Image 1 (cartoon, rainbow, N blue to C red):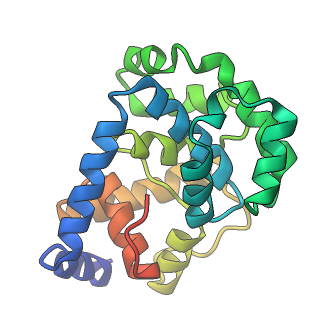
Image 2: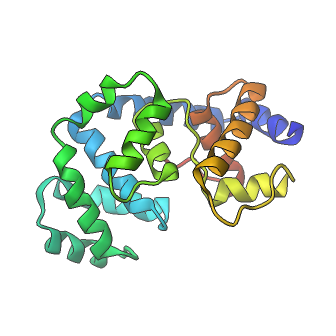
Length: 207
């Protein structure tokens, strides 16, 4: 664990820290807009079993379409833009529209990020714990972990975990607790930690 913490502390003294700070400010900004929040929800629906860079490309192209494009047309656009599961993701986005007008209010009604994550997993089709955590981080929440294969690979490489066959809720929370410990030791939030770990694994500070 000390090795990871030392690497993060080095990055905190480099130009990467400025990129992380800028990204965190962007996340806080997104939360101010109901439309921006819904667009980010759609982005996180798209990233399940797909790449973050591919999701970013689609979000830029279809930001307005998320709000009202008919399902068949949306599926056609997702296919054109290279999504692996255009029909399923189009259906999930259209189903999520029932929350688009009051999503901001629902989010603000919760004072516990973990309970809000449970609500999202239960009520928004296409969101598991990873995607719900990704969404919350991308709209400015700081205390949930995004456990994707990059993070799992990094933790395995440092012999902190054995790669799980599946990420059950219990296993997710167990790894999240480990990441919380790393974050505390490094002096960063879980949200910032994810960006640093992603950089360590990919050389990029994406969202």
